[in-house]
Image (cartoon, rainbow, N blue to C red; front, side, top):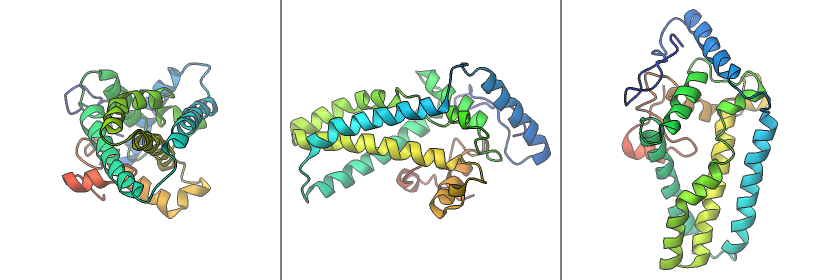
Length: 239
């Protein structure tokens, strides 16, 4: 982008420019930001290990929840649909009002706006190296934290409905998280990657690219997997 820092919604984010400046001037700034972040990467970091830990937590979550959510019944479809809407709106709210507003804990805002949006701009969405996934994926401990956060909701469902439906809710939380991580990573693929040309990947990348324009990121395209929240709150922008 045209500059390396941007004042965010609460006045404390990095300024990344407008996204509409001279492309020749945008490239060096992006490279400088990326090199600065890469220099702070722990020497022992490996993207493969990061992916493996995320996958291990997802697998553990599925193993823990799936048997307890069985046997499925036809009426579960209504619960699955309802939980999906809840998760999509939860993703929307956390993205719009936690990640993009410098509230406590400020580390969430810093990680997302300063680091992720600083590393990936509208003009430079792609990972250049496998270890760049460090700025795409959530930390491996994010899923256990998410499950702990929604545990009270699951407990309430268990009390009001049944334990099996509560486990179904947790199963859907884990599955939604996994899908989010995969689709987000696909949206940051290099253009020459064979999967980058697939229609669904291109659609996800187009939608997410708008959100990575610093002039638009605080107002548009907060949902990612399923843009229901954007549709309901009028925050969908196509370009």
